[in-house]
Length: 308
Length: 308
Image (cartoon, rainbow over all chains, first blue to last red; front, side, top):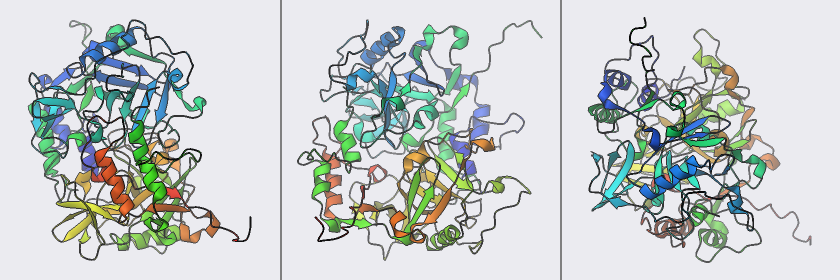
């Protein structure tokens, strides 16, 4: 067998661990297994969007600290069932998938009303750096003076402003040429090499924390932009709901490793050093968009302390 | 309609152009349309691997300048129909797909003989920088002192050595812990964010120049590594052939923009400046793994000069 990068893959997806095998000492899996509960955080239900596709469920964490107006509008749209029955309109290889109202593509076609959501929002491309609990990565970045994480989101900084970085899995709000032409009704997710040239050019609203495989494997639309010319190739969206609108047993019970925790810092150090038996030349660094934030299913809550 | 990055998408996939619309002046499409024939090159049939999957065709350009022993072995394996009937064994989201002999995964299972190919090769992680026609990108890189292109391949340099960079679409040879344990029989392609930490740790043998969408959309296998636990989810490989073994009419008739051409340099400058009506803040730079090398179907050869 050629395991190709066994140790590396384990670093990248270290939360999966067979119950009957203890993780190797010093491994990413061992670090995660030893992390105290305080190093993990649950998703806040009002910041969590659950998109149900025929293929599976996509869980998106919203970033109200960076795009408060868009996130508020997205919550309103989700509560109004805006996306239910709409579609994935575009899949451009190594770039983005995009979803929204197919009527937007057809001149004269009626568009689905936004309901109580706003039709006009400010551009939210960046925000003041002050007031953010920023955990810097010391590794440098070609696109920004400083990069790091804020509450699990990859963030870049320059001077006194900060913005969400266009890494794999980031979700943004499509717009026309006018910077303030996005409403959050048409969204996209990055499915390839991080298109960092988009940073500070468009409003980023959150990150897919589970289910990227359902978006990334969608059949690609025709070049150059990947909009499906054949409407039957679009994927219908079953529903997009806020987790807070779901009955508690149906909410995703995910926990993310806190990016301000010592365990996250230790994992990144492990990634730099890669003492794994496979690596010949340790990279000595990590890259903002190459750092996966570990996610796990939360333990089921004990139903009754007195039960056996 | 929210075209989301119309101009950008056109930059990224600028070879597609509706025949009835002239490209906008100064656009990437206009630059490509104006490029003289000498700025393009055809794939060399003996350096071109054609993988046929049920979904479609994947065309891989080999890089004998960087991995001569592996490329020679891969040619021998293809001529011996080694991969025909084997399978895609692994698809790990945001990392790689990998293909080869399913028997390698099962202790005691017979393995498909390599035929006339060698069972032992040297590691070819890097090579001397001298002797390469290197076109530098002036934009810098976090992983290497210098980066650029050699014959369409993304390349990094440090001191007197050079290596192929792990960008989206690059193809490498899976190995075990021993650096010289790859034969080229088990190959992988990068389907996500460039895993540059692998650079100089594994032998890279070429690049997918067409058909990445067939690999990138394969159903993912289970975490952490994406090897299919259920063998029925594997994709069977119909055939992998050298283009030089195919009858000329069946060979891919692709042309790639020469990465040492003025047109390629001008395209990259356009990407830095992004004067496209959509971009608010020009990035001012490109990134090695964010630079797509334009590819086009070659014009059919004129069959008869005297025909109407």
